[in-house]
Length: 304
Image 1: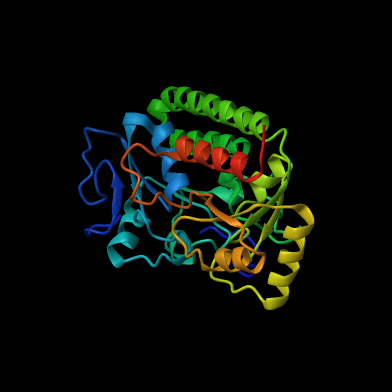
Image 2: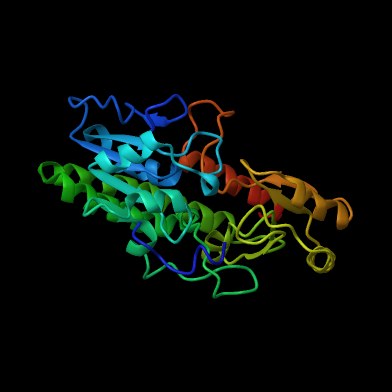
């Protein structure tokens, strides 16, 4: 993934597999909103929905339960990207097929990492020069993204700028509350070493003074070497860690390998929020999943 993330480039479905909040890109109800927004994957779609409110129709290119790194657009999705008023992508090679689809758009594209480049530095474990794209796991940076989305929506729908700004203030306030909950909840823990399936939590770890140790690297399909497993096992014994965190959407095999190698660590779930799985019903969203993550961290790190 490092090669994917070396720089930031400018980068819905009309068929049954295409996930849409509201209407599909081929059946947008113009009376329901004045702007058609296409978002590359869940965190970007959530922000667009929250800031846009009833004035936008938001389509998510990545289906529920799908891994966004692996997304390949169908021709109908490429066409929907071209027709949208606003397309929101992460950038940095996170989803190459999406970035290729937006490359020829003259305007109406928000590349999140490009917009946030003042804060998007490296947080990969062991190499601060390795760019971690998972900036949405830091509620403070997510608040900055809210402002960028509000500005982008205002640019394509100037008549409703005041509404977008008001919605952005509301969402920002919710994210400030979330940040405070994390800061308080992780302030006093027996351990600050965070053992994860892969390096998806660098931004969260840096915000709340944790030290992430990923079994795999930035991409979840990287296989750990025997040397890496031995190194982590020794660190588990040194720190007294009790838990290794696995993720939704990807195999738990690499984390379970460390759990066994280190002598029976507990395995718990920490959600990188690359997309909601479809097993938890319709009530889950960014805020509720992040709070579930906080509860899992508090238990796994023995926080008071």
